[in-house]
Length: 240
Image 1 (cartoon, rainbow, N blue to C red):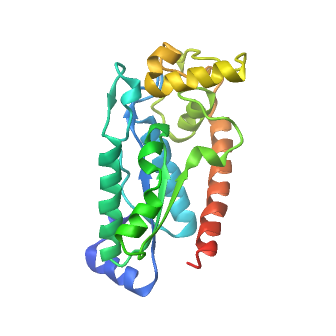
Image 2: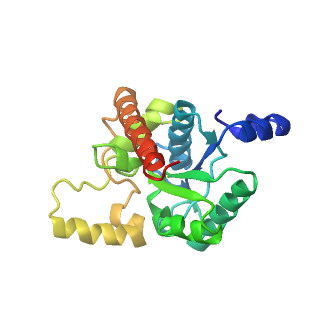
């Protein structure tokens, strides 16, 4: 089983009853990604990663939560919800899944700004459910070797691999951290968390101009392989 949005109630309930199901909730964002990538980039990538992961491991894929915590991108375009709102949505969804006899859930995160909202949410949901629900939070970019960026080489390559909605002719170099000292990088990272435009000027962290579909497919394969192993480890360690 993969996407539940395509399922029908009687069949879905029968499937859940016949076999213990594991759910995946992708979490993205709607925010600027420079002039060459769509504002749905985070949502697009995490949806594709979660879809392929769910198909590989036979998980239940829920519709992506497309809105995240992206206030740091203003005055560039963003549609944001507060951290408390995101936490409440996830809590409600997980409790609702539990009522439908689904008690193991992976939250696959696709946006850095969501991390504050996701901090400690595993224990919160476990407490609210009286230890009936097991939740695991995984941010997909932690499962690749290359350092992640924002609308730079890595993210642009991933989008080229999964989408036709990329305008490479408009791609421009953004903030270059390669020549920065650790102290300078720490300082600019703190600034970016408060105001991404002030840190990057054009909203890009990295250089997307040499991004390619081939490299994007390589990165995507790496992420999926490592995520699959991590999911299996989580389940084994908790006896699920």
